[in-house]
Image 1: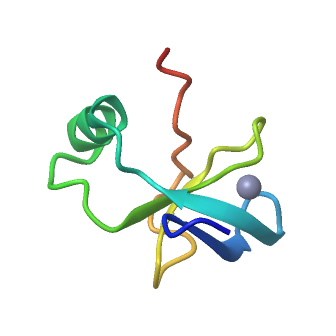
Image 2: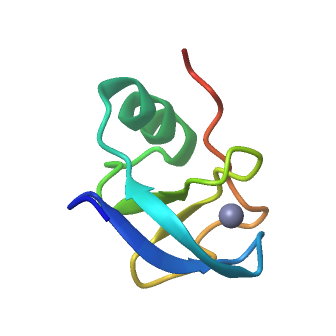
Length: 72
Ligand SMILES: [Zn+2]
């Protein structure tokens, strides 16, 4: 697993899944606009149909869940 990947529980998959850090400029900009604060410390479930966003400590920081759109 790469340095920017981590296995974490995904609340929408209801299982432990590979997550990756949100590091790209476009993803960080999208998330910052959604949550209106610095988009640091967030991880995204890598399953293509999921893309649920969580923090390291909190599996469900958003209600309803927030999913990263495909930005490309
Ligand atoms: Zn998931």
